[in-house]
Amino acid sequence: MKEHSLFYTIGLVTVTALTMVACGKKNNDNENSAKEASKFPEKMPVRTSKRGGVVKVALQTDSPFTGIFSDQLQVTAVDADVASPGSESLFDTDDNFRFTDKGPATLRINRKNKTVTIEVKKGVRWSDGKQVTAKDVEYPYEILSNKDTNSQRYSSQFELIKGLKEYHEGKAKSISGIEMPDGENGRKVILHFKQLKPGMYNSGNDYFSEYTAPYHYLKDVPFKKLESSDKIRKKPLYFGPFKLEKLVRGQSAVWVPNKYYWRGKPKLDKIVYQVVSPNSSTQAIKSHKFDVVNVINSQWDQVKNTKKVKFIAEIPLAYWFIGFKLGKWDPKTGKNVMNHKSKMDNVALRKAIGYAMNVDEVTKHYTHGLTFHITTFIPPQFGDYFNKNIKGYNYDVKKANQILDKAGYKKKGKWRVQPNGKPLKIRFMAKAGDPNQEPIIENYIQQWHKVGLDVRLLNGRVTESNTFYDKLNHDDPQVDMFEAGWLLSSEPSARGMYWEKGAANYDRFVSPENEKLLQEMDSQKAFDHKYRVKVFHEWQKYMFDQAYMIPTVNSYKIKAINDQITGFSLKPSENNNGHVLWYQVGYVK
Image (cartoon, rainbow, N blue to C red; front, side, top):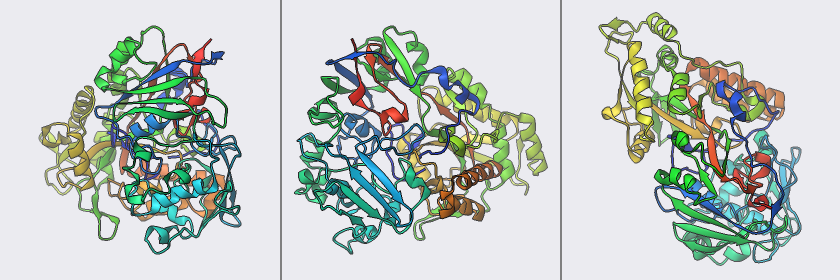
């Protein structure tokens, strides 16, 4: 899991969108509902397609899209979605998110020399016809790490590349660890690292960039003006299957084929993205105004019988959880500091809260089975890294009461008190969401009341989005417990989110054992796959035993697709770093 990814409009899930990656064997054993993964197909039926046609895509957002057409500078998933017909990653992956040689470039890792060699294939050309060069592979590192761009996509993990930190700090004019052996106009780049990491074999690892930038096109734009320049905002250059033809800023984007595309001519004549309010999603599906629309799960019953559409879905790399405020972030030291006097710093209390939650009942009642209970913080999509032996916090009121009684949380009247005899009042913060959010939250509060825990919503209501993030980030002392979630990248290491120096560790929990396990996930010993799997299993067991956070649910991510479309796939091996590979999409003959 990484700290520098795209923020989705639904946010810190409530979701804070960060990015995780997988490798290892595919494991189809899933918690509770992953066994229902066949509920929806991952792709449209494969049928003979014809040339031509226009696909209209509904871009569901309550506000205009930012329109930053740069993989190094954009920070929202909406922008990434709009850019997907043109933006293409350097590398293809298999279904376990491991790099393959099928994409625009190949990648070789040399552990002895501590190098990663990237070679762009001949014929991979920008939409202006120019070959993608070594300089185009190197230039993203300059954009990401030059302080004049103020890129939010910069990751301290890039600093494993020799000389990159010095460039970032303004102490060097170039990055010494990036070698172009055949010159800037060659196609090969060698990255020299201080140390290699086991996650480097997987997409989404944040140790090196998976995207390019057209140096010949952008070189005359000062870094300070790059994000606001017309070359980024109005007339971007990509080497993907389509190029931007027309843009109505913040509202729509029209893409037409890139005649120089390296895989061949795309099937479609045009792709049109148009902003649509989430409140209009159901009507957008029923009216057939669009060919591709994301389904809002709470509206499933309203759309499921719509004719002339097919529903495909993926189980995203994501999860929701109940978090506990156990300390504060210290900006001076850049570390999380636990407060062992915190009322939530008692493992028995946290476990009882988990066992008192009727998650399975809630998902069936409120979400049409499209949301499901999870057991750990490593999703099953990560293959054998997922510890299937952890059964999770399943609903057990009797067990919750026994745990509280044994730990000294005695009842005085209706409510339990702390073991020291002081009153126990727990303030719970939940973010405002779809119409189901409030009844679900109220249900959980009633469950906690059943075991004698005086849990109340902060200020008596769900919290507005911006206020929610502000309180979470600044460790508001009024918050004892909160509900949030992550959207993950495709490298499974949890270190970026849960270590002592991680600002995104919103619980602020710190322990020697946790630090040890997180370090070992990315250690040199972890190049041994069996050892790395063992560490991941130990960490998941540790998190379950300590209940620093309680994993709750994940949800199907469903799309309604015009049933005359073929080639639309959500499978990792058949898409473009999480986005459909538009080159293969067409209409049925």
